[in-house]
Amino acid sequence: MPTNFMTENVRTHPPKFSEEKFRRVHIFVSGRVQGVFFRRSIKNKAVKLGLTGWVKNLADGRVEAVFEGDKDKIEEIIMWAKRGSFLAKVENLEVIRENYDGEFQSFKII
Image (tube, rainbow, N blue to C red; front, side, top):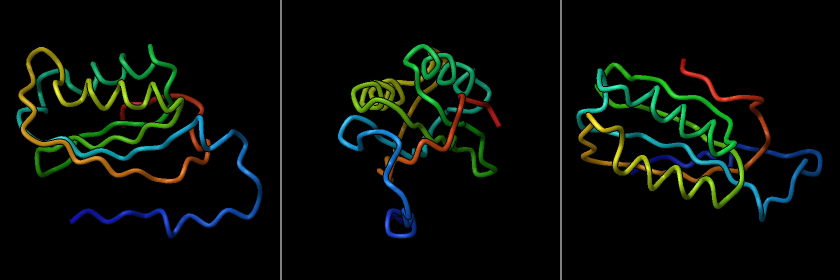
């Protein structure tokens, strides 16, 4: 079972943006998702949607990503990640919803 880090995020000041409009998700994607332009494609999609965060390959063959932004755009990137890039074969998508905190200025491939 995935660990949700929501309880570890202690906020000492009001959020910068309405938490009803903005979201943060942490995803893990497994299947044929490395060496098939998955990271570049998800970065391009995230930038097009105006999302911030990062994406990286994991040693176990999965791809990990964190997205922050408009809640509707977050749902759109999750739907995209279920399909993946044209060469990818997504077998599993784990989505962990976390507290939005406006941590990122852009979207990066790590």
